[in-house]
Image 1: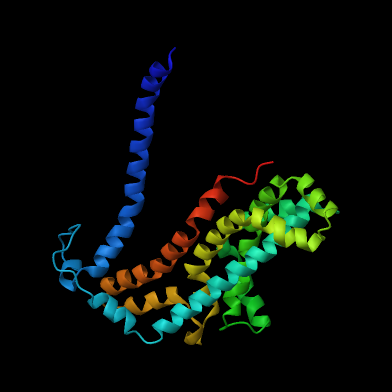
Image 2: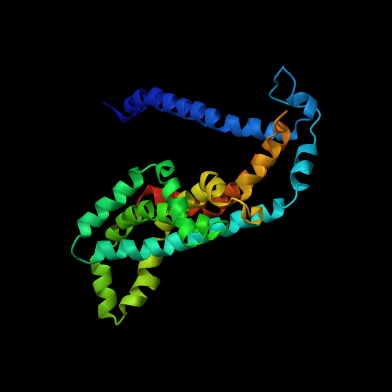
Length: 282
């Protein structure tokens, strides 16, 4: 069969795959579009029984109500502190731990790796109450530490397991060559190995950032009385009222929450693609 014939045979399949990808992309993006659209709609259009996928009179009133809320800026800053701390700490700890379980042989190494997988299977909701009592006993309730520590603990198993593949893909011959050239273990770790597995660190950081930034369960459970320590998802509760919810404010606040995630994706997208695509090849 000639090459031209093969291309003709494969073309319908390729077109079907592209069409399916386009449909999935539209289905995923439509809720985001509706959220942003509702944030810009005036109150009358939001409450109308005739839902329209456009607006001819965009308004910033919903965003104005969001930014006029007391302590909204502090909630935003708290979310940045918590998410940033978890991302940086989990990346560094996971990198060192993945290097240890990959390059060194020690007792219970396999058991430790299995425990990482088991930890991923435990539902977060099942551990919320035990974590609440743990934070209470350590005096961490109503502090940002009560949000940082649990998210750090839940992010590490996934990060370590994923980075293990990147570290393992780095040839041991490269490490031996570095030692022959006089490089110490510390220098090899940070100047050679770290840049090679950096795409994997970016991929795991995206997971850590999204799960921490969007957290509502821990913020609602551990921040009880000191609202100054609340994070941005808690600001959405202001717009839920007993008589009638402020859907414009809810959509505007949700849009504001989405912006940092999009910015983070734009900053790391190149590294993210290479990190999800695979590790370093020998």
